[in-house]
Length: 461
Image (tube, rainbow, N blue to C red; front, side, top):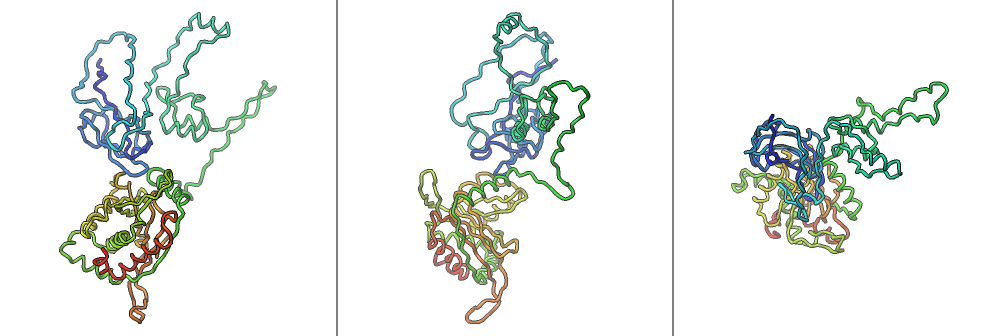
């Protein structure tokens, strides 16, 4: 018989992979029990409310156990994988009757957030893993306890907490089921999802007195269902869930105002073609969005008060002296808005390079939580879907968002004559608590003026 020394097994816990997040879903395991892992090796991919993130293991060893299957939502601070660390080889021991061992006192943990692999650390209230129960053994009740009950003084005993995984506890909470009332059917006395659903199903009422004749069996109420051939239900979680919550919060917190302008961008489209041939722009992403982004940055420089946020707690307007330019990107996991840090300081080639990296990373689903934090102003290009424009909703904490419609060849009065011109419609939504109509109009007009006469990029920048 062999056993593993206590110090040889390390439990890797779900880190806080984003600022203040409380849970993450395990999307994919890259290792299995028995695999050898090294410090820094990615062992799994998880999805939080902000992005999909790969988790590296911080030590060498051999995988002993994966505590949760793929698709499970796990609370931050919960152990997800057990690894036998290097140097902790199994030690042979003799089979002897187990002697009672006193559990070592748990060392006090420092106040505040604990350092973790990714992000800013987990909350001080960490989740502890309970030991699994062994087979039940009948224990004789001491005579003193029996006599105490007879005297009306029952012995005091602490009731053990039911064993259930975090998703099962959440299901029980949603269905209003008390876990203490459930008889577990899972291994080692663990309550399963089926146990919770069974407890939530209404049961026939029992008569108060035995009936003279056999009572008819009352069928349980049918479980609500839907036609799978006519409907498909998609769980709302991860990025999609967080986006929905953020948009609802923004729409009903910040008073939105949206203004529109239709502009002739023929000269801008010609400049795009010229830049594609420029040696300094070779290998970079050059498209209309690049010049639109540059135009917005110039407009912000001319009207800096648009680049602000509202501090509700302090009742202050916070003016930003930097621009983290957000670019809305549609991905298979939902809409995300990574941002280009300090976009105001970048040259046109640098801005093109940053845009290219941002788009490719978003398409690959590798956008980090840090890349989506700290945005100040956003651009959403709805024109790629063939629509003229829209009324965009502000990202929480930002004061303005610019929607760009489809660029189409339309009849336009140019130099006194109707000619076919490349035309688009811009829409600027802004927070009316800190941006009034005049300021918002100036910013939108400046963007339009630059796109109509892109030479202004040189004189205004």
